[in-house]
Length: 267
Image (tube, rainbow, N blue to C red; front, side, top):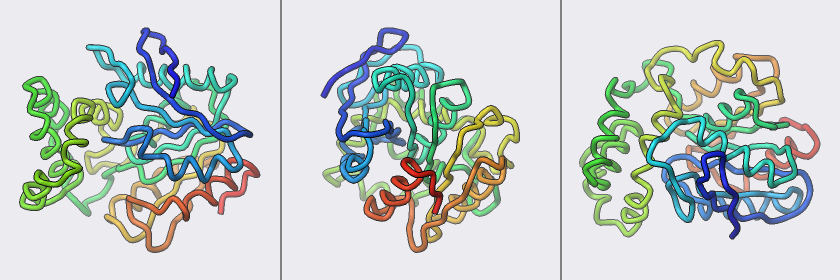
């Protein structure tokens, strides 16, 4: 593990492996760099792969005042350490953060995303209007378990009874450890989980090649959102993984990403 310092002085922990063109893996809610280890190991056969702890998680620091731009600056620091430009792969809400970085001028040469959790249709309820505010209040109270439960019911759409049973599972402690960053993911997502179409101009400035991937066996709104994102621009291309859900197999994902990152192949 090593660290870089973001523009606001926050230390961002990362690991690097492999050789070749640089790829930074951007995790979604709850994810730390270890959660991307299997995918990183497969990509490292062809690329220099950087996994990192987003601010507030794992071994990274944080700032009391959050702004999405700070997370973009974290990526900028990692890209600079990688040699001044890099490709990005974003998973779930990390996909939207990666899109934001590319849109805000980060030195991104290619971008791949998997199932940004957009809600753009009526296949499931949208997030409550006060979703982020409620998460922030729970975190402020130190009620991390309740924050996790609220995320799982309101954002993921799990039944409350199922979430109550999960509280006794060994992994619940790990989820609580990163719960204070759940409002960050909510701010990254913005109003893209409102049940309305994606804003046509939010990522208009992204001109690099973008691979938009989704499974076809998970929640219907995931594939619907991916299709809508891919349709926003000619440089966005859709790839659908048959039989895959949100927790996609790294062994299936890695060859598609490798082809896209090393030769430009999109399928």
